[in-house]
Length: 93
Image (cartoon, rainbow, N blue to C red; front, side, top):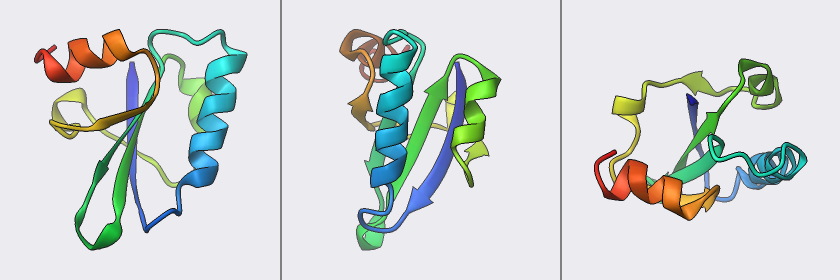
């Protein structure tokens, strides 16, 4: 899974979530596709997108690559499979 991240002000990421949900459904809800978030100070949020194919990255302007090891340790799953999320973030996967 390729990971990208970007910080947003309060509510500034609604369009990103909609785009991700559309792609997730269009590709048949792949298990290696995930959108997670963590709250930051001052009402900001950090979104992290996990994608199976680098060609999908073009839909996400302003995101920067991030290694799996540098993802937030306690994010919230926004879109994806709960069991994959739990394996990666709640069980130390």
